[in-house]
Length: 640
Image: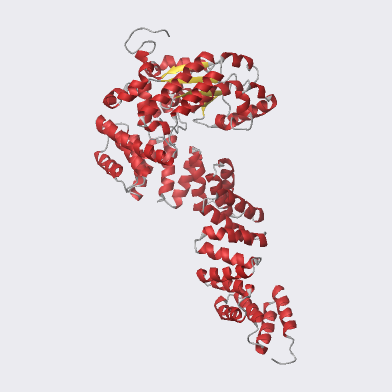
């Protein structure tokens, strides 16, 4: 080494030049140092970094590798070696080098950064996430680091972490479309649909033709069953990419909810052209057929049901489709066997997961409700709630005619049917609100006023300028006591139907959400008895407007019963209510195909076709069926 060269001073100057982004000067100084001392580890490292910054990653590797050989405890060199290897696509080697750097210096941010990015590329997301979090502590303003955290967390289904990460990215880059899209997707998975839709609509404004944005936006619209916007978004997507099965599925669903069945059939056929073995499209076409059955489809459904190698959900869809098709062919024994097999699949899975239905708890809940909510309680609470007459609640057991009642009422121009909403369940989850309605000593008048006014404003925003807004979630029958305290003028319509038909219909229906009590006929019957008992209790103690609607009576006397229904709602009669099947509105329940048809009576007494298989169920329901009400089973009169 020449005696007149001050290597350390040159190195300090080279580092200063590099930090000032004067790469040419920094490189000249490094070469001068290396000319004097070819094994100067720090100069080799810096020279390698300069080459990486110039896009010469391959040339940098020998220099930085030599630096690590000269000084094997040099963490910065290992971190920069990892950077170069990662730029060359050698991520496994990069991860090894970066890990060596973090072992030598756990506080070296660059090492964590390179380790995290390498592990992401290697799809080792579980390992990448803690490395990236450590990198974010050192580089809090790096959108790329937070973006990588969001990507890893979302891939690992850690949606809360993903939401936080994407939110940080958007604080720094508000118009970043990928961050908006991914944030919307994470919010969707957390069921925060309003927030998801807001950010995804913003992403669509920024990138109108971006397929990922359109596809991600479609998902919360589908889950919220916002059929109009959903169908528009899906059609835009399919104009750009016509063969996406997921989008075709959502479009078919949206068209079905809107009652546009001819268009829905075309979409299902298009879906089958892309994916000929799709059970979902076959099932939808089978449901829309309503009469008759395709024997080729029957054979396919049977083969899929019996195929133990298929995922359970596919076998489940096949089983219910097979049962429905066989019933249309009047092969009731075979149809029942298909329904029973499908239900047994779900029942077994629920039992194994410990998520089956607790009948004892359900009975206890009804006992508790009947014991607490008495006529005297409502007398004391009479003036405490919101006086609005806007809310209408249609309740009962599923398959008891709730959708038909809503469809008839919603055909009136002054009524809006909002479908099955969980608003009341969400409202009563609020701190102290349920406790207050279950213990009048906890009453907080100001809190109730605020929450009930907010709910009425929410209903008004959803329903528009109408007089009545219907929530037809059947399970609201369990909340009528609380709802009456909250909304003393709300109208309650309790739907009732021959429990034998109700239970059979639930057992043979593939609900969108798992109805755990419907997979076993005896459990179904026991729960039906409890809900029927609860309906009797409400009829006896509830003040305010309550109407019983009997399904069989409604079907047999459509006009008179419809007039009675509209009068109960406090509205003038409108003939459109008799043309309910022509009403263009969203219907998303299991009865969506039935209410698109004129009134029919073929489902009354359906249980008789399957009577040979219903013995235990019929025994449980014996005292609650129409011909036995008020009589013992032997036929002698008993006190009502």
